[in-house]
Image 1 (cartoon, helix red, strand yellow):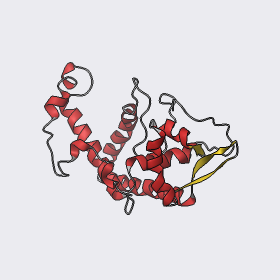
Image 2: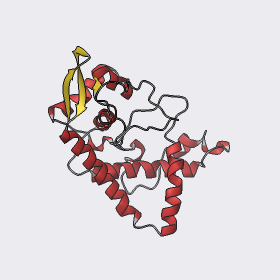
Image 3: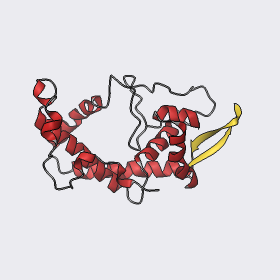
Length: 213
């Protein structure tokens, strides 16, 4: 499997030391200057900060080279599994052939297992193996550890300010004009009722788990 650095912000690819964005003026001209939302400068700084921090957290997950799609699939299966292949494709918002390509390496590496569907002998169910659960748990722990280390640089007042900003950042995750995007991180899909899964599988199927977090 390849693609560890797929968890990046394409706009931050000029390098970790870059402090400017040549596309900033063109991008924010119709947003920041309209008097609504963030200023043009704040938009650029926020986007670059989020992208770079995301890339650094991906690198902090030592030894894992899962792609964004594979991490998302693991999180979906953890939260909603056992799942049929079509159900996983619907949750991820992709076609079945696409999700097949995504999970094939996960199955080969023993992170996801296929078991017979007790309700339909023609189908199989996808569920996380102990190795898959251990992998996604480790990735979360390593990424959280990076943030914990970085947060020690802040003063107590700055920590409180950052904590107060977290709900605001979470609001930016919601797109009222579209279904929720698939997760590009190892964390479980949001259970926020403001951002429901539009095609969430039937929770009455035996063995289906709720959110682990």
